[in-house]
Amino acid sequence: MAARAYLAIFRVGVSAALMYRANFLFTAGLTLLVGIGVQSFLWTAVYSGQSSRSIAGIPFEQMLLYVVCATLSLSLTRSGRIERMVAEEIRLGELSRYLLKPVGHAGYAIAMAAAERMVTLPVVLGLAAVAMSSILPVPLAKVAEMLLAALPLLLLGMLVNFLLGLGISYLAFWMDEVWTLHVVKDISLWFLSGQLLPLSLLPSTAAQISALLPFQHLAYTPAGIMAELIPVSALPGLLAHALLWCGLLSCAVAALWRAGIRRYGAYGG
Amino acid sequence: MEGNPVLFYARLWGVLFSQALSREMEYRLHLWLKFLIDVVWYGVQLGLFGVLYLHVPQIAGWSREEMFVFLGTLFVVDAFNMLLFSTNFWRIPQYVLTGELDFFLVKPASTFWLVFLRYPNVASLLNLLVALAVLGYALAQAPPLRWEAVVAYPVFLLNGLACMLAFQAAIGAIAVRILAAEGIQQTFHILYQFGMKPDSIYTPLVRRLLLYAFPMGLVASVPAQVLLGRASWELWVAGLGIPPVLLWASIRFFSASLRWYQGASA
View 1 (cartoon, helix red, strand yellow):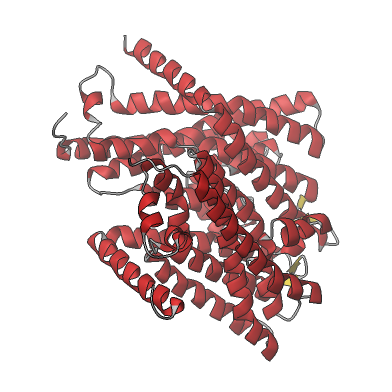
View 2 (view 1 turned 45 degrees about the vertical axis):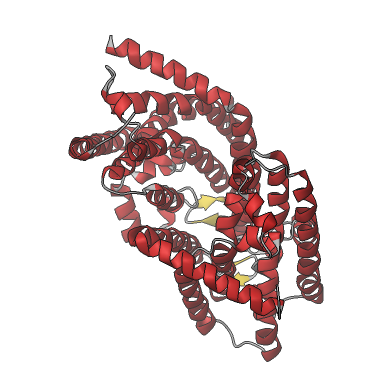
């Protein structure tokens, strides 16, 4: 019964996401294109001054592929319209309608968020495949293998970001405005996720700290697998790390919900 | 309006700023969080280039010290833009949809001025202090400056700001025309990404486009090059000549677009 309800919510979410496809193609497409373009120009300039055409053991073509894949990965894992809307629902008292229905709020939000991301996932994977086969170039069979290896990390990266976003939105039980925290999170993720540069380029202490944190799974680890900066043999360890963080963040978000819902009050109708 | 218009608008802005400050003081945590947004953005930019210069001595002919002067310049122009125009720019679709623009049209002051300066962003004043500190630190590390560059630099900074206003005014004019304009407004931030890096990282064709077609290169890259004494005569001429013309054209375009506005509050 519950599974059928969440499946129905997922279907509604897919329809809602497809309603905005023209907007997605224009803003997200242009943002991606310009973002990848500017990053490519920057890294071309960084490498052009080097006689060896290699930085920290990474050749230019591999870095270019990494930057493209990392930008695509973060664009997929970071989108969080649904989580941000939760804060508004709490503030306006619209949360009450979930309390009256036979679905959990977090379950509803995750079904809607999954639907939103599932619409963009094939586009991102397709663009990554084009980049992999044209920049290095990698044979098609290898492209499919790399994408399959990166896919579970991408899915866990989406979950990590969803839980971070939902946790921030649940702070709306105590705070009037939390959109600033969402923006701070999103800007920080450009750097912390490894979208701007591979985290392996950080000074050793910073790289060790970032390896402990969950943000790497939003861009660095999936893009690293796609660009062969990270060997596929490291995948089980990375998946275990991402799963551990998903578990920890789920507990934190559930605790926030339990504490917050006790404070929640909605008046009128 | 009586007397000197510059004094009139300066006094008006002072009143609007003090109103904005009163509003922000009601939600102080929100004020600090808004301040934090740009501080984090500064940190990300500094972090990116800080790490890159651990691995390479130069990027497109810019040393680490020179790049930090560029970033300081970018932060200062951006902080002024956030303080003065940015909040207002994002409100334009709301003004049009709700009919709030009516109130600006009937007030005894320039409609353009009110649309783009009505709501100062108080938090950005704090960001401006941080940006100036970054610029000051960068200049202390940079090679000695020539006096003519120091004299010209504020003019180029002002022109960089004029470019940003011109872009927002042009996009705002389109927003007045097409009503549901959030997507169009995003194009400003998309194009702004080109201005967040020194123009010498781009190919000659893109550099020309960023100088003459979409002059994002004039926002921070050209002022920083002028200050560091590495700007060609072409950059001096473009940096001094293009922004005023662009701003004049954008104001005309915005004013013309108001003819399409039909009001929504009747």
